[in-house]
Amino acid sequence: MVTPAKPIPDDSDEHRREHRQRVLKGGAIITGISNSEVSCTLRNQHEDGAELKITVEARVPDRFLLYVPVDGIAYRCEVRWRRNDRIGVRFTGTEPKPRLHYG
Image 1 (cartoon, helix red, strand yellow):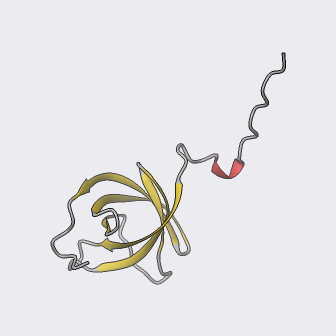
Image 2: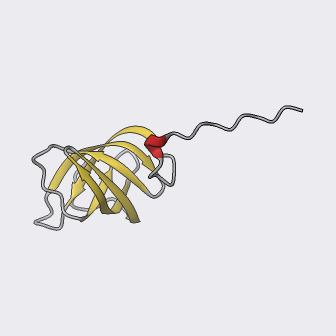
Image 3: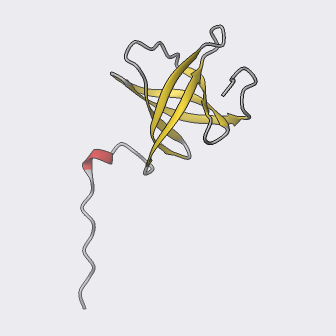
């Protein structure tokens, strides 16, 4: 009887606890500062978080509301890491579409 081969671990994902599905969704980071918005793109996502692409000059606080029009949901987010034009966030809850967002 032959035992099945074990998959070789992918070291690039060793720090992730869950597989993130690749996506390409537009989003709006809504900060608490004068209800300003920063456009972003979701690059990958899972139920607990996502990776966002932003402009390098963007000022994003450690906690914010991320509205994703395609999902019709606003995710409360906490920044877990930052690298150049990318930030990793953890979802801490959801809210309905913000009234202030016109999209």
